Image: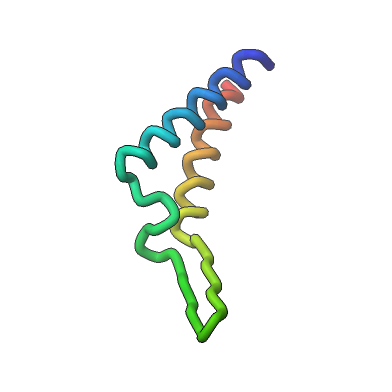
Amino acid sequence: MGKALVLIGVAIALLGLAVMAGLPLGRLPGDMVVRRGSFTFYFPLTTSVLLSVLLTLLLALFRK
């Protein structure tokens, strides 16, 4: 359990560094934004799919 928490923490730190370096996480092509007057709806579809794939690969490594 300890190793998993450390690896998850390192992964979050690396993700934070990537965002600080300019990776437009949350503003990728395919993320949907609908603006109508004072209403704004934002759905990060591409970002969600990318994070899902990365988490799936990371968890698959933990199982082995």
